[in-house]
Amino acid sequence: MINKDIFTAALLQLLPEKSLEENKVKGIEACRKAKQMGADIAVFPEMWSIGYDPDKFSNDFAVSPDDGFVKAFGELAKELDMAIAVTYLEKFQPAPRNTVEIFDRSGNSVMRYAKVHTCDFGDERVLTPGEDFYSVGLDTKNGVIKIGAMICYDREFPESARILMLKGAEIILVPNACPMEINRLSQLRARAYENMIGIATVNYPKGQPDCNGHSSAFDGVAYRPDECGSRDTLIIEAGEQEGIYLASFPIDEIREYRSREVHGNAYRRPNKYTIIVSEEKNDPFIREDHRN
Image (cartoon, rainbow, N blue to C red; front, side, top):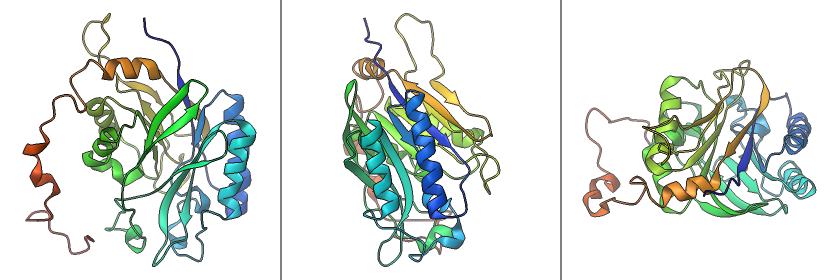
């Protein structure tokens, strides 16, 4: 019999305020509510520190990891005994980064991930891309869970989630800032299905430019032994409005499923995939604004 232990993520689908300090105060209040609701981790949408405002994509508006804004959420995580994934424009040279910092329930920073696939065709071309994807063990009341992170446009590349799966991630957190429609939701559903992995995505609600809510979570469990056929892996899809939405992942069921099913890394043949790491680009995929 599968243990019913769960891992609950609070998807903080919030409208940003007008300043760093106001976003800190609103974020802290939301985290406190998430704890009261029973969350193991609270996750913010992309670049919460500046409310994903492209007019502020410079080091003048960025904060360092030891800034009071970031440290406040580490201290809060310890106080609440709840993990927090806070997002911010990180001060970096030669240009800032789009970053998520994950604090465990003891207030320790266990991951700092900068967005690898910056949107170089748009405003994010002025940012510094991240270097790698990471998976870390997150201590929870039900034991250690391996988590990873990717940010918004990273979702468009199957390699992002695949690398995280190969590095042992069981749950992927995805801060986001864009319209979530059927195709993007389908991408997340596919990433969860093909890697047998949980995915929790947090978007800004309607009212934030170019955003429409629909934060979502998928558990990646497509088949159950006692059920006929496949099942929808969707745990929750929020509406457009501002709110805190809980996604509870059946972590032990996910682990049992991964131990027996055919996806993920079970039957891969990496020696056949060498073209995937080739730097060569040909028509119709040549873009002048592409950065290596």
